[in-house]
Image (cartoon, rainbow, N blue to C red; front, side, top):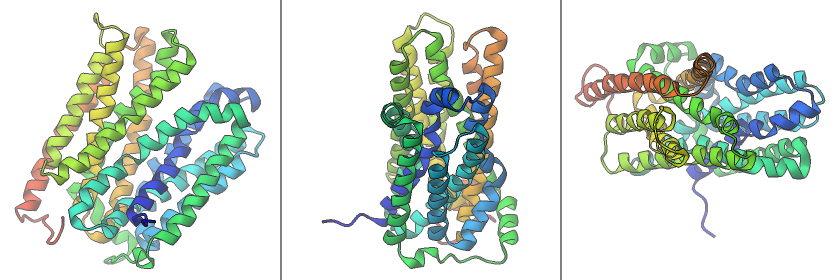
Length: 402
């Protein structure tokens, strides 16, 4: 039997962590009945998992570089498993809220070290392709949870759903520990953690990648997060709405994987990012702008938005190992990217919801997502100039980088 490549195990571990991000939306109706979760508490349950990313991304990324990527990722999976096992046994919304915050910490620890680990585990010729695969971990895990969660909850109840995903993460923690070599935890770090954070924040590359990620995540969660609500308001049956939302989230992995493949074949990162932002702007306009387009054409706009938009995160994860100020700061750089990604996810949906409430519909959504897309294009131009200076051997260039 052919042995699974360690880098593939890293991707699978990330998917098992992402399942916990997507496990909540299918369970919310049941939780509101069984635990008497209010609508406000339901909103906090959805957003608390992003709180750790908004506040601790940089610090946990730096800690991951110090502890060791392999140990950090296993620790994150263990925290996710413990919190999910405990969550299935609680009887109050307050306890579930606290455990959801713990899951956010576990998710960060389980995801931040992955790009640096993959960089160490694969040869340079396959690096971009494998990082593109890693970029698909979130849409794949989220879509799988959205798709299979309702059936599992119907069979076992929401606690069984929590315990099932806790078991998956536990198994992946063991597999990751066994599959990765011990020297995967050895990271060359120059100076203290504080010094690494300082060098990361003084470098333009991590800032550009992080702001670009925020412009992407604000759009993506705004559209995908509100699809069930939009379809429910349109009278679409719940089962069809769940399937349509899961498909829209899942196709995002196509763009992520394609980004790695296209980079491998010589496409430039700025070109792929511009293409992704442009597709998101056009797709959102097709889906939400007033006009004669019917529901099928509008849904095709959503698919265009998510599929080609996936080029952006796939490219940014590949860039993370290039824009980090040093090899020992890759997890710190990814942590800063994660922090801004979480901020985008936190900021985008409320703005769109406020606009929808003000005008009595979702027809202005494409203006909001389009503004984020336009900002992303501007940041991409700055990134292109930064990469050109780096490649030309300017002051930010570092020898020996891919």
